[in-house]
Each structure stands twice: as structure tokens, then as C-alpha cells.
Length: 434
Picture (cartoon, rainbow, N blue to C red):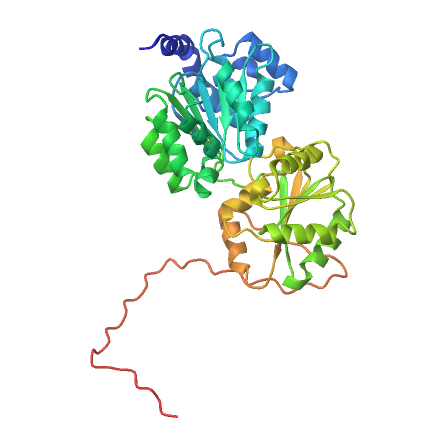
């Protein structure tokens, strides 16, 4: 075994006994109950962490013991700290190892920046080099940073794969890989790049997979590249956050923008994200609503990365009140001041609804989500309600005439379908003469 990996194994063995005593059923009320170093405890205190969330209290001990883990938890529950803390606790110093020891793979550039910042914040008190490798950034700066030596790499699959092809990203010393928002990465077609990255890393590594949903594609990936993973489910079949009130409006398609204007005036949100289905529709709605409402902005995949970063920073600084966006901000964007989510266009996929709504009500704060339903979308509404195991309340605005509520799709009958009658092979349909 290589000396660098031997040191990792020694660290894991030293912590194994204490970690395994903390079972998944144990309720951890303080980070002091976890087997963390004094430096990490001070970093958590400085970052404002007091009580670990369920995913943190359950995942950290198992990850510190060296097991592969599949963690399922709702968005906004602190998944980043859940995997960043075990990695930071077991890192070798940069003097001992110049090559990356952990790789964190995320689906979007914005999430890569966010995870990088959060990891660096939790590394307070210890010199730790974290490199963010994502598209839209100057690749020459990334090359210089990798050459100078880093301990943790956070990146998107495309840019990580690009660095592997350039041989600028060395993976010989990697002992931990994190797949964050794995379902989203597979949804947008990153499976080939993810598999190439996994195959380039040592086989005796630790793999942590975290996501809000676990569809069959994610489970198949886990079966192929993980060894007897521990499964931690903090969703408990409750996909909708309890602190988020969820309602819907029924409205004719040509009156959606008018309804949105009325709703924004009625609610006067602290900060709101209005989700649209297309990039062109996002820009069109932004131009229309910004005439009557101040502090508006838009964001979608066709914008330059510099402009997307500027918009997100304005949202974090509360300079932006209403953001019109596509699903590019539907995952992982952690801004706790978002009070309202408005699904101007209902998402076609139920999981996308879960992630959109998860942008509000984060870390225990209250939030509200509205969804616009046009005639013909009743079946989509029913699918969403089944997915979150919760019935949405119908809302209305005084003086605004709405269309009747859409018919709900019938519940599937639990009866046996009668067999088809066998047709006479000599029977033929005869065309009626006019």
C-alpha cells in the first residue's frame, strides 16, 4: 500500500471505534457529540453551526469510519457540510501530498462555486487548498492552481474530464470521491464523464453519493462503483419541507403574466424566484414584469458565466428582489432569504418540482411556493401531489377571474383488467360508402 493511503487508513482506524458507537438512530443534539477535532469545532462555531441537521448527524460518523455512503436528504438540509467535514478531518497536509486527495463532483457551475466556498469556510484555522474546476472560468488559472498543489477539487463533470484529458488533474492520491446531486448530473447527460472520472481514480477509494432523490439510474451507478454502501435516508417519504406552504392557481394561458403581476403585488415577497420553462420565455417575462416591479433580474443557461455570477451575487446581497430563471438555479443554490417560489411554468418532471420548491424554506426558515396550472395540466398536478405525498391548496386573488380547477387524474384502480376478446380472423372493417 502506498504511504499516503496507509496514513489515511491509520486515521480511519483510530476513529473507527468512536464513530461506530454513534448509530443512525442516535439523536445528536450538538457537534460536540461527534468525534471532531478541536480545530473543526472552532471552525463550525465561527461558521455559525450549532446543532447538526439529521443528514449531518447520521452521515458524518459513517463517513469518518471509511464506509461508502448513499445519503438521501431534502435540499437545504446541510448536505455540503455533511460530506465536507469528514473530508477535512482526514486530509493530509499539502507538504505531505501535493496531489488532490478528494474530488467533489457537482452538476452546475454555480453549485461548484458554492460548495468550494462552503468547504473553504469549514477549513478555517488550517491551511487548506481548494480548487474549483468549472466551465466559464479561466482554465489557465485552474492549471496554475493544480500545478501548485491542491488538497480538494470541486468541479463539474465536463471540466474535470477536460483536465483529466490534459493530464493536469492527477488522481493517484485520491481517497474520497463525492457525487453531489447525482440525480441531476445523470438527468443532464453527464454519466459518461462521471464514469470516466471514477475509473481514473484508485479502486480502494471511499465514495459518497448524495442526492434529494434516488431514481433507478442513480442506484445502478451506485451498484457499479460503490462497495457495500451504507444507505442513509433522511427524507422518510416526506419530499415536501414542512415549513413550506404550497398552493396552486388555475389560470388561462394568456392571463398568466397578469396573474403573476397581481400575485407579486399581493405578496410583496422578501425575495422570490419565478421559474420558467424556456430561456426565451424567461427573458420575455423578465422584460414584461420589470416595467412594473423594481429590483428584477433574469438567469438562464445562455448567459455568460460572468453575468450569471453577478446575478447570483446580487441575489445573495439582497440587491435583487425577483429573479426570473430556468431550472439552472433549481439545484443546490443556497440562499436562505428566498421567501417565495413561483412556478410560472409547471415543471414536467415531479423531481424538478421538489428541487424548485427546495430553494425556499431552507434550514428551517418558512417559505411559500405557488404553481400556475393551465387547462390540460391537471394530470401533472396530480403527479406532483403523489410525488410529495401532499395535496396542494388552491388559491385565488380577489378581482382576478380564474378558470375552473383542472380535473384530477383518477387514482389507479386496484382491479384486474379483463382479458381482450379474441377477434374472428375473418372479420374485417368495411369502409362505409358515402
